[in-house]
Structures are given as structure tokens and as C-alpha cells.
Length: 221
Image 1 (cartoon, rainbow, N blue to C red):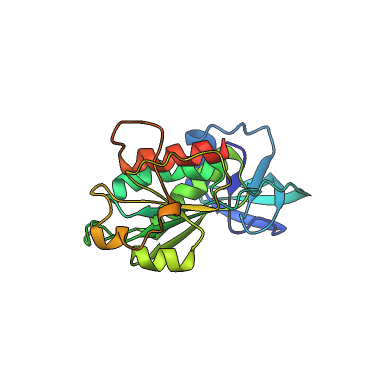
Image 2: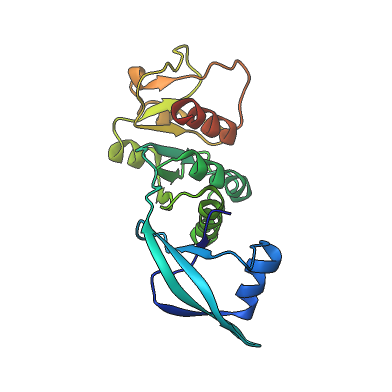
């Protein structure tokens, strides 16, 4: 763990509950003899806190130092991911955050099931935990759009990953769109320009999440 997230990070003296304190030292196994480094994920500072006191209900921390340590993503990559089962999304979202994806836009395509609802609060908690582990100092942005057309209107420079003959090369990609498990509908494909649609190298039929991670890895890693 590279740091601990706390909205209060930056305040001179703060109080954390014993439950939170126990989670830090027992579950995460942070060394009690070492300083605690916190981020608020709003600024570029890493805040060092020391334990001032502990009682039965809470622990008081005092700010000892702060240093500017910018580990924001340098990428501008936007990933358009047509909505699939939220459980699948939750398993992959931290990986995209660690890779340095700037933004993920969840798109309700024609073949996305309307009962799939994105729990933004839960995804935010997952992303915070991911940042704590990988050291990233900004949260990946999350956005939701209601149609493929809306995505293409907002991100007109996007490429689309689909079943075509043109292979995705190594040219710069600003944003891309991957369809849901059922693929794109006929009316959605009519929105695509021929020069913006590509396929991946693999001849196998990939799951939506595999295609998303694969393209991100090709671009960012």
C-alpha cells in the first residue's frame, strides 16, 4: 500500500475511529512504528501523520509534514465500454485505473441489458483502493452515456473495435469504443465510418472485458 486515503488529509490534527484505526494496522498490516502517509486524491500532496494519542473509541493523528508528489496519470485515454454485467466491470475497473486510463465512459448500447445499473459509489470505493495500492494520485474519471450515438457525438475521434478486416496498428489512439457481449446492432454499425473501425490481432472471439483490457494494454503498457 503506497498511501491511505482520507478526505481530511491536509488538516493539522484529525481523529479516526478505532474501527478505521484497526483496519489500518490489523487488516492492512501497516507498521505502527512507521509514519502514516495519506492522500485526499484532490491535490498533489502526500501528507505524513504521526499518532498523537489512542483511546477506546478513536485515535488522534497530527500532521508532521507534507510534500508535493504528483503521480497523476499522464495519459489522456478515454475508454468507451458498452455496459455489461456490473460484476464484470467491478472486477476489471481497478486494472484500468492502474494502467493509467484517464476516463471510462459506460455506454448503454442497443444490446446492453437495461437492468444493468452502474453503482458509481461502489466503483469509486474500488478506485480509491486501487489508487492506494498502485500509488496513483488521481481517480480515474467515470461517465455514463445512454447510447452509442451519444458517445460518438461527444468523442468523435474515437476508434471502434469490431469484427472487420482492418487490423488495429500502433498509431495514436485518443479514445476507443468496445461493444457489449452481443456486439453492436445494425443501426449502431451504420453510425461508424469505415476508417474508424478496427479489429484486434487475435482470431478468437473475445469477451468485452478482454477486449477493453487488451486495447488499453496495447496503448498504455
